[in-house]
Length: 103
Image (cartoon, rainbow, N blue to C red):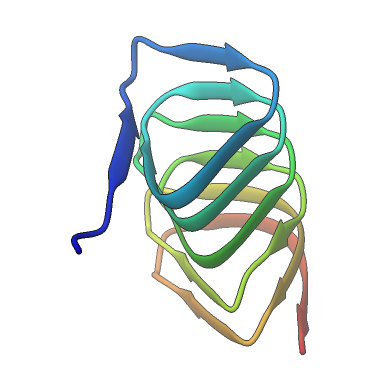
């Protein structure tokens, strides 16, 4: 059975929480918490809320706490908040205002 993917493009604005059981790709503006098995944000994404996922790749703006097993921060990302993770990788050029805690 193949993994399902939900995609929210840059012309979408969401006010409220998002829950996706499988994979979510975002390039949208979200004002609310996001829960997803896998989350990938692109450079146009603007998230104002907490993220809970097993695997997160951040490429856009994110303001809020992130709880994930794996967090990847791309060079295009601006991240502000507390990160709780097992594995963290940050590309050169990312803008960070974070506190990171490994569990």
